[in-house]
Amino acid sequence: MDTWLQFSNTSNKLTRTYIKEFLDVSGNVIIREGDLTVLDGNTDLGQNLDVSGDTHIKGDLKVDGRIMFAGDAIQTDIDQNVFISKKVDISNNGTGPALTVRQYDNEPIAQFYDGDKLVMDIVNGGDISMNRDLYIGRSIYISGISEITNTTTSTDTATGALVVSGGVAIAGTLNIGGTLNAGSINMSSSEMSGIL
Image 1 (tube, rainbow, N blue to C red):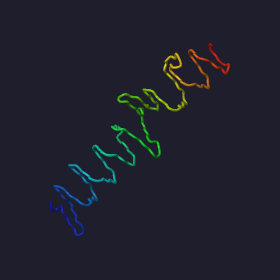
Image 2 (spheres, rainbow, N blue to C red):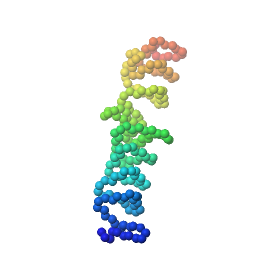
Image 3 (cartoon, rainbow, N blue to C red):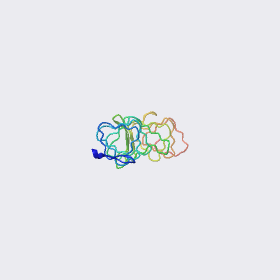
Image 4 (cartoon, rainbow, N blue to C red):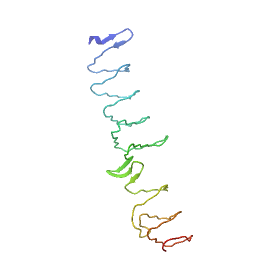
């Protein structure tokens, strides 16, 4: 190891250095060229770590505190899953949308589970399937055809496949295939067909 040490008049230059125990540095350590490699053991930092370039971690990354980033979070391996054991709170104060989900190929876009039970499914193409009730606090506007496939028979004003608590306004033709039970009928037009 005698050839490892080289000194000059302008600086202390060490071409190769072997330290068996430990190295205690009270100032800065600057690596101008080459890599810093730890072959065995851990690397402990008591203060901040500032990395100007890319960081490649081949093992797991465990973070005890918060993760804050200003850029994008990109997962390049699409065959792996991301599991989050805590809740996800998305808050956006900038340009929307706050959440964008893209699914390619002929697979469901999103599925929501209550435990192991599927309660909501957004399938390929945008159709939505729900396992339970849907409560809407305001108006609902439908531009397409609405079809109710339930066949529950109506015996009074509180039963049937479609129960409306208030009034019903129909601007077009009303076709009734079964019996019409009405408490009273007020006709503003004389046009009525069928058996009365």
